[in-house]
Image (cartoon, helix red, strand yellow):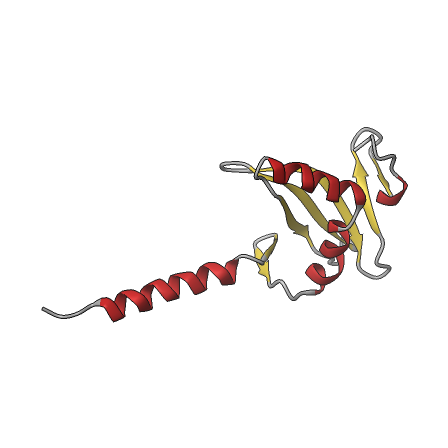
Length: 130
């Protein structure tokens, strides 16, 4: 009888490497952008540091949940911004909490306020509102 332990180890290592390679990817429409992209380095890291995002993240970690960041749209001829959605992954869908519009040329980040149907600066928000 042949010893298949080497093959098993090789298959397990391959599966592990595939899992780790997919962890830090961001989705832009149907495309996957690697974590070393401009979006990850600039905008998502800035969004993670906004006060109310930090507070929401800390509250969710108590419940063993995490905020997820998805790049919904990237700049093109029609739009001059990245739309980055922040939310919580549920069993089969993402519950969107915040929509951030990030302008690549200026580096400005705006938060969509659905109550007033407007874009506002996240820094100018009262902490109680969000």
